[in-house]
Length: 320
Image (tube, rainbow, N blue to C red):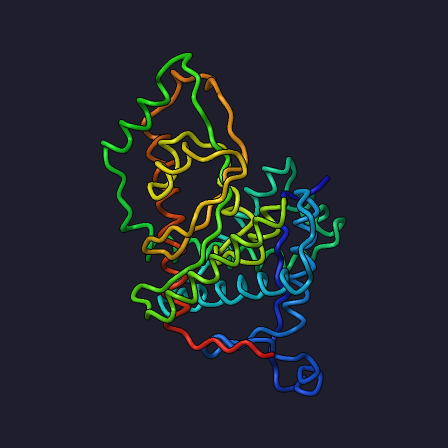
């Protein structure tokens, strides 16, 4: 039985103890994030797990250097968020962790003992997996307390979405859009803006040469989770982000936009596919479901801006 690909990124936890200084010195420091470090062995381990995830979802493997840069960027962002959790005094005790693990086990139709056996059968260390879930829970707490609390979904937004979904038996045009983000801080300098726009133009050039959008996104996008955010999935016009909602319907298949700028940075989009779709069970659409969908969309955008802000205020040194 295979574990869900979303559970497969399991970083190696490295305990730093003076007694083992000689062996630790052999493990090169790849990056420092404020007072924290990322070691080469940790990066290698995460790269290996990323390769397994890409294979599991059928994505062609990017160049080794491109993948390494994306994985290191993800590790840096994770460190920054976990440092925020520590500064805020957040903790996940063993009782809460065990409850979460039991929920994951049940979703895989087994108990904790059976789930541990499944992980080990697929080559994963249960203790490492357990600690990664603890980190994920801490990251979620930071997300909710520092970002999520400030997100509002208006009744008017919900009304628009529900109204669209309740147009019974009416075909909806749906668009599958590829998305690349070149992030900018809150108050960027003109040099920073020019550099970001130049990178966006480079991404457009790469897209013109490559038929594989995901490969280009992995190389250029600053999204915190490129695999999930590079492909926006099938959406109607009203479900698209405001920045591109009026642009996408006028695009042709495979057309690439010019760099589009908002508070998050520059965005490059490509219309990957287009279809006519009659939604099923339209009458079952509920206001709460619409509210949750809109909330998650806004949360994703706000979290990316928060991570950019954290990184701009941090001391990050990537060793070459």
